[in-house]
Amino acid sequence: MPATPHQASIISGEEDFLGLREEWDRLFARAAAPYPSQGFTWCRCTWEMLLRPRGGRLRCVAIRAGGRLRLIWPTVVMPHHRLWSVLVPLNVVEYTDVLAEAGADAGELAALAWKTLQAGCRADFIFLERVRAGSLLSDALRDAGVAVSRIRPAPCVTWGEAGWDAYYRGLSKTLRSQTERRQRRLAERGRPEFEVVGEGERYRALASWLLDQKAAWLARTGRRSEWIGAPDYTQFVRAIPDRLAADNAAGAVTIFALRLGETVLAAELNCVGEHAVEFMNGAYDPAYEHFSPGHILRAYTLRWAFDRGLTYDFRPGEERYKEAYANGGCDTANYYLTNSLRGRLHHGLAAAARRLSRREKS
Image 1 (cartoon, rainbow, N blue to C red):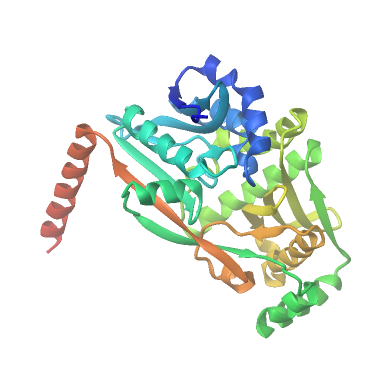
Image 2: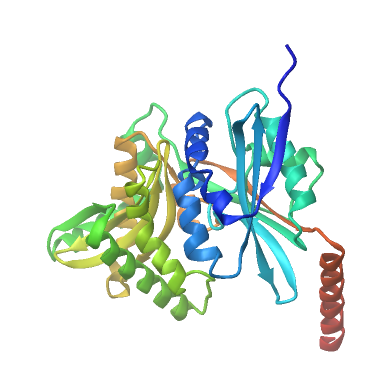
């Protein structure tokens, strides 16, 4: 019996996008180990709270066979330097991959999705970041000859069969002794409390605290972030757990906090899925910096993940603290492509400006 042919399309209307919910939820249940950020509710919140208000235009690849939705890949075309446009994944700050039905032809579906998107997105540039090595999208881009622009490690902690004690003893002696000593010093001021909060007013209060502390840290260190401090991102972080819970969606956004009495010392924002805890952001109170509250909190958080058999995923980044705890991980790739004559013109103008600047400095 011949295979049912696949029909690929790009959905650009919001009403049609929202109408995918039931099919999307069923596809999510058939996919192999999807990320919570690939779920419909997460993507809808990202669209409505972050990307639509910034001028985004939907470009959602859908592949069907015999009327059955077999792949979905939500992306958005955004304004870029006023005169140009760039396509980015809808779950813009998460891992990037297609959501495909598990099966022997999943790789073929991903290849068709890439071909469809590149030809029909009508964007000057395509930016795909945090594409995990070995993922469906990574393999499709490799087979299509798309060059990697940058590779970054994504460290993680996995547990295997050795147990918590074996993992903990495997950490550097310096890290263990310093953390334990500072935890004892902190205990002299009172009993540290580990708090896990996923919804409601307490979550929103902790989320605001974390984002405020992170913004202050960025200011102290002279760093910048497109998201931290932006009102729309703050709204998203505060709202996403309740939206996921209301829709009975997979995954949860959870804050892990370390406090002394009512004083919050450190907090982590994490996405908790069926298989992993994904680190999203963290902050600490600089008044307690000499106690290293972030390290003390991480010990609690890692033990929480271990007790539930969940990988702790630090997500992409070369920070030394991630390397200190990780015992595994994979590479992630960023891809930056020009996708139109206008895009090539912009690229040429930017290269000429850089050459002119170097000549002036010399």
